[in-house]
Length: 214
Ligand SMILES: [Zn+2]
Image (tube, rainbow, N blue to C red; front, side):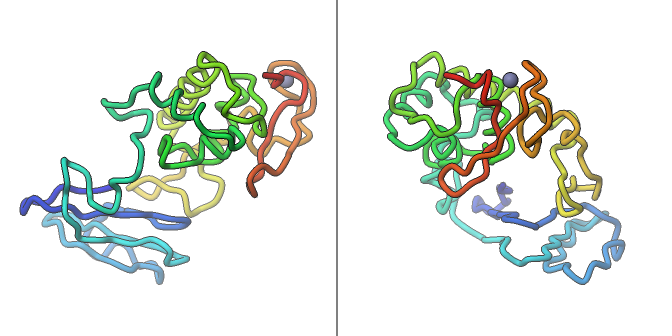
């Protein structure tokens, strides 16, 4: 994420694994993992990061995008996101579909959880090559990604441990609505077959072996 600053530059922020942005009253946050405290007048903006992989970076804006983020493709919520063109870009890759959905240079913002949920919704196998996908299937999995992330945002996101919180420090509860991710052994909500786990491109992927056949 980034903030556009009054001097025309940007404050670029990466949360990485455990970074939290908290809006709080002065002195309210007392975590031992508080790394940066920004005085915003009435409130303060605190950066709490247990594993310290996250960062804040003061940087130049180029055409409205911070310079270090220039190589990152639009995410499905951006106004200039083009589902047809992104689907075409996916179909130029030989890699497994799961890896392509996680490739930030093709489409950004889709993590492992939402990739699995989107492939479940579009009935696509995680390990299948993106290259041989039909255009309509590539568009369907992108549409499903956007839809599942929109539903998750309404519920505050997917907090699978205490590190995933909103700016008020509250956890999301979309984990109750997951159909594939983390559901190994549980019945598929569509067909009842047990969900399975497989490793694709070094990442765990959860899928239904019966109805994810495309
Ligand atoms: Zn199924």
